[in-house]
Image (cartoon, rainbow, N blue to C red; front, side, top):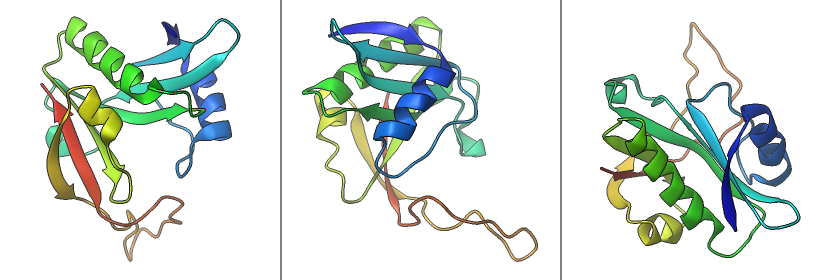
Length: 144
């Protein structure tokens, strides 16, 4: 496996095909892919933190990490995302997993489990939304 830079449009095409519970991403700081000799096997999308309290100018968030099931692909992508984040001058990288996801790829890449957080709908009475994402609480992970 080799790491390559990736355009957001190409990452989104891969996410549409392989991500289990989320759709495409609107924007990003950067994207990376892993490939073997024949095809792209996974992508990671890194952007500004979704939670505005984390958007301190020194923190980024992995908003999508997705593979076709290639062994160690997620760990490789999370590690590469952290190296790139540091190289750009950022001090922290965060991401979230669902409660039923083990996080073994994050642990293998040196990330620390922070705890349970978030969940729920983004919709409000005066601003209704159609929720297309899982609404349960998430597990927050970070590396710094």
